Image 1 (tube, rainbow, N blue to C red):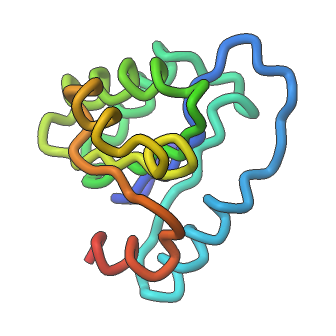
Image 2 (image 1 turned 30 degrees about the vertical axis):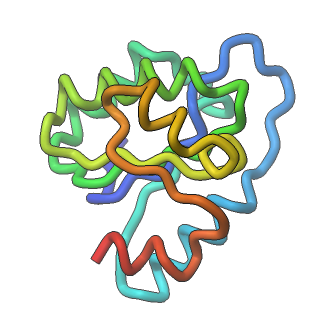
Amino acid sequence: MKCENILLAVPVRKGYSQITIDLGLLYLHGALKREGLAATLLHCPKENIDLEMFGEILKNNRHIKIIGLKSYSVDHNALRLMSGIAKKIIPGCVIIAGGPHPTSLPEYVLKDIPGMDYVYCGEAEIGFPIFCK
């Protein structure tokens, strides 16, 4: 898988049987595109991607500069693991979490996940493209 400089991902979820389209990430992808920024969408549950495969994707795309992870509270541990993997493989990348979990508990997410650089609270369609520029 060839990725752009910005990777937007639904985290790895073991045993997750309901695969749904993530409209939030699709809106965000469209907002980036409107601003001339290219991003790759990665839906780990849909693609059956585990942590090892996530690491392999990053090894093959060391040019990634920003990783955005959409998360619910159930994804907290996956965020910790995925951000740790990303920082080992691409130390200079910026990792930002968005979605209901970091919006509700931003300080906790930043404190509990050492590899997390930022959290985005609320809707990101306007601010995230500015952040990425």
